[in-house]
Amino acid sequence: MAKIKVKTHSGTKKRFSFTGTGKVKFQHAYKRHRLVSKDHKAKRLARGTAYASSANIEALKKTIPYK
Image (cartoon, rainbow, N blue to C red; front, top):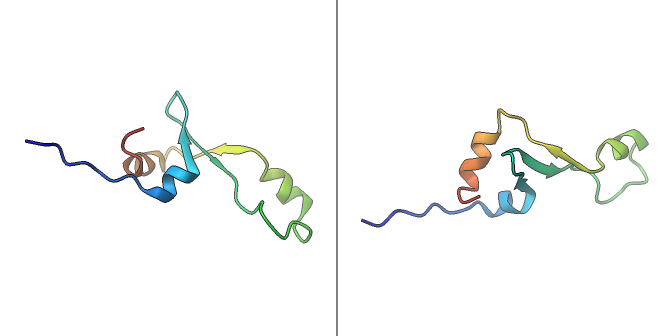
């Protein structure tokens, strides 16, 4: 009997990536437009990448099943 394939969530695969140790990495939001009116501290904190909470990792793994 054939195994039923699970579809990968397209929005999740564009926004998140898995590290070698199983953590989930993502970019911060609010860094794309209208940066003149935003606080310098908020822009600085939104730089770079961050890691998803351990409470959300299982839900993210279900949306990207083949990673």
